[in-house]
Amino acid sequence: MLNELEQRRTQIADLQPVYLEVCVENERLKSAEFWSDWVYPEGAKPEDIQNELIDFKDLIDRFSKVLFHSTGGRMSKSNYTVEAMCSEIDNYYAEGLA
Image (cartoon, rainbow, N blue to C red; front, side, top):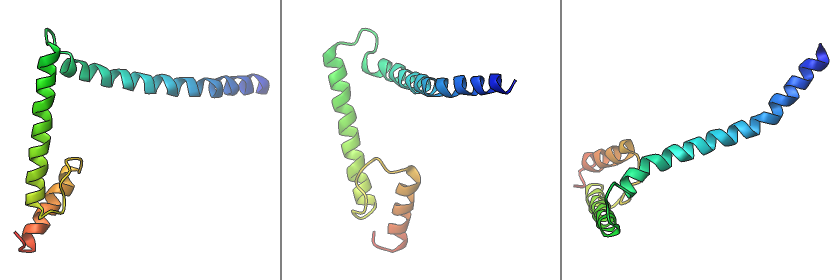
């Protein structure tokens, strides 16, 4: 009985890395499926996609300038959390620097 339990534990331990790899691959595929509609919408031409990406980059650039202005130059990248951005803007205005 003990030997059988030990064999099953070994089998489970051997399968665990494979299971984790499958989980990671599934997440990667879900992410790819999400983006496929954005990058390759039905009937889109490469020029259309390029124009949309240019518009998106322009939007991010403008947002960064507004964030820079709203925080007195303390932040300028759009990769902060919403909470961090709002907090920094609130602090900037609370200090009377605006």
